[in-house]
Length: 429
Image (cartoon, rainbow, N blue to C red; front, side, top):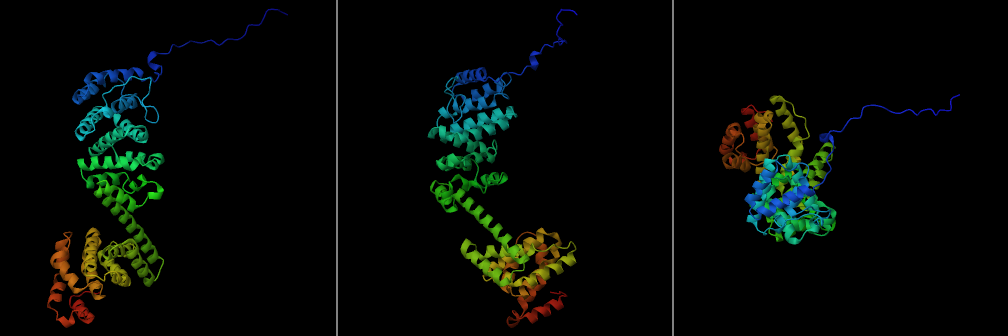
């Protein structure tokens, strides 16, 4: 038996050399920051020169990889540590947003710098929104002047469409809300935004991302009421924002009320109980009778799955409205409420094409069951109708209006005379 040691097996094979381009580059923003800071120090306060420098440098510097670093420098002068403080071991510049004069003209000029940069390098768009969200979370780490400048800039960028209103979600952070930084920042931001556009434009942007009903979250729970919201922003000179929030509250309340009324009707709750509930809501929520009759009309018409054939849908509508006429009558005790109902009928018949030919019969029914009066119909016909389908609906009502005008005073409220007119006109109501 051989004493020679048995040789251990070895792995053999070809060793591949890693190509330089396949090696993952280490994230090191130091050199990038130095290049950007050096360029900003050279351009100084000339923001036109800053924009040109950034445009030119994008071909040499890796903006895609170091987008956060780039935006930190442009806003704060250097890389930001968590919380908003500048990193101690990094090169800084004194030429940035936070060191600029606190005035609208300068903020607009800075907004143009960001606008040009993002238009030139579209891939920075998402990173810029993330940067603004981050900066809003760091508000506690900034001075009051820095917060003011950031708020003004953000408002201008929102007005120009460079940012989505979804960035406002950062202001709902519990710590910011608790310390009162969120509403104070929002005041400056919305003043800047509204001054560049108007409240309607602001409202549209907020609705687009579902922020229209969330602004109340700028306040802590113990102050989260529309009364407090309204007073705070009105006192700050933003009454239009307070009014917008009030309208949103009212809209939300109307939607909830309509949902509740529909449920009660579909469950067969008595008209007496539904009317009592509606009257109570008018008092409790400060809803006008005109608003309530609109909600009742929509609720009644939403209960039915309507036929697509015009002749059948008219029969359906007459049957449904006749059945629910006590509800309609209960909330048309004022002349303006009657006119409001006629306008809602006109609007509904126009928007739902199968109801176009049903308008006359619906109005006639409402007159017959004393929901709307002769005066309301004549006022609607002569001056108060909507433009929607005007020629069609006025033509439908022409003969009945002429009959109303020519009828003897004693017969105006006589249901028998109405029935006779229906027979002579071949209408079956």
